[in-house]
Length: 234
Image (cartoon, rainbow, N blue to C red; front, side):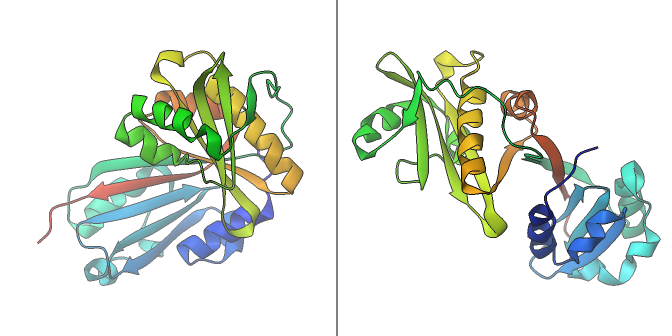
């Protein structure tokens, strides 16, 4: 069983508007969100499921009305009287121990402004969805590159969030995938986070099997799943 850093609970408590202590006990929490109209979102982490749904449904159910676990979505659909269709699923992985993976220092080095053209070439080889997910930019607070000779075959960077959570973003050239480059960059960034006294966070989407595989091969642990469910508007 994973031992989670308390800063992860603090972060998600603030994100979802719940007491961080709730993550220590399984159950369901329901919140109405006035900005939502045609979807609901379910966050599932450490046994605690938090539902954000449109305000018009607020009076139709309470947390006590809902079954927990795998039966939650069916319970929501029945009590709200709507069909639910999965629109997206995101995964949030975290480090639960210091990194003990090799960093491949002979191929990885920090990038500077002078490397911007190399990064631009790498970004041009990737599609828009990959760029949006990785969020790797030359002016990020900490950015490294993986080189195959003179070619920048991959890049990774860190973004600092609340409570010393550092988000890892990794981008690999399509012609150089399945060679462990993503995992090597992740390990290097994770080691840097350890030096800074922070917590490594790795976010990806369920459809990106390669990215999910990197997180799991590196030994990062899944803490939170975010699922968006759509339904017809009245």
